[in-house]
Length: 89
Image 1 (cartoon, rainbow, N blue to C red):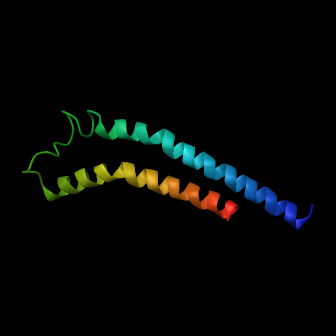
Image 2: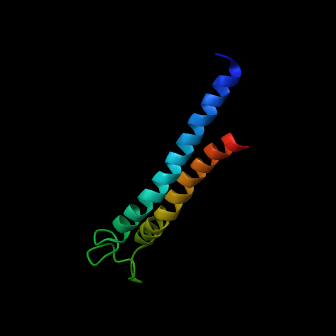
Image 3: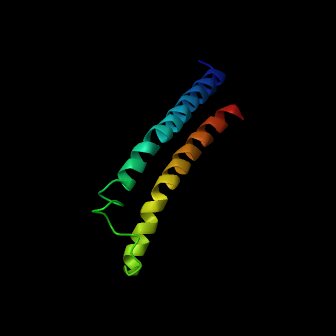
């Protein structure tokens, strides 16, 4: 097997992994949103983030929970973009 064929195989596998990561990010974003916005975290029985008298630690926890979903999506979509871009460019 020549070197060119090995490069082509690695590129094709990288492209497949990139597409899989992108689909995974899109598929898990609504699930993650339901977990965060459900009753356990932000709901009635949740952390009470709307209260102005909570401690600074609880404010930090509320802020980090709000930022999990976009960070998750952009990190996984970015990794997929890197893998796809490596093959295409």
